[in-house]
Amino acid sequence: MQEMKTNIPQHVTVIMDGNGRWAKQRGQERLFGHKEGVESVRACTEFAVEKGIKYLSVFAFSEENWDRPVAEIEGLMQLMIKAITMETPTFQKIGVRFRVIGDFSRLSQKLRDEIDDCMKLTQENTNLQLIIFLSYSGKWDITQAANRFYASNKERIMAGEDVQMSAEDLSANLSTSDIPDPDLLIRTSGEQRISNYMLWQTAYTEYYFTQVLWPDFRKEEFQLALDAFSKRERRFGKV
Image (tube, rainbow, N blue to C red; front, side):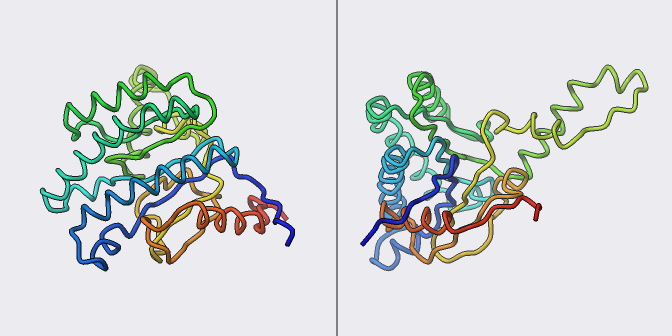
């Protein structure tokens, strides 16, 4: 059987959903599902490098997730520290640049230090950018962008100039200003919403929803998403 020719997206982003349900199905605590979810991130990162995808971003923890039970949040943060420490040598080996985007003010100093160390060590890698959205929300991002724009134009505003922000101005002040907008957004576990994630950047993104829970989403499922993307005709509002 002839293999389908796949149109490779430049930027794939994933809303990783279903860790808790996956763990519950096995009679385990939610953190068990999060641990297995880390394995899916590893597998998808390796696959993205193999396929020539240049940007892989994942929604790891939203602003709203801070309302979860304290024990789960603490366990998640410890898991992130451990995962970053363990994966850094692999990032170096396969040429992955590691980045984290979000509101760092609520993160522990230890986690921020691990993030900073890994980002510095991998900043020259060029095969793939792996971007973790952590303590992030799309509304926060847009609000921050607007605040940055008006802060940089404060003197003009104070002088009475009619300063108006364009769509290009807003994009230039987002946390993702140097990252291309996603071509493909994948959400696992059957949910069909984007949950306050990259609201501005996904205006013309192709969406792919799958019933597969995130800990079970590996290379085979990733390939199915890429195959579905290849069948889409992207017109960006044109005929």
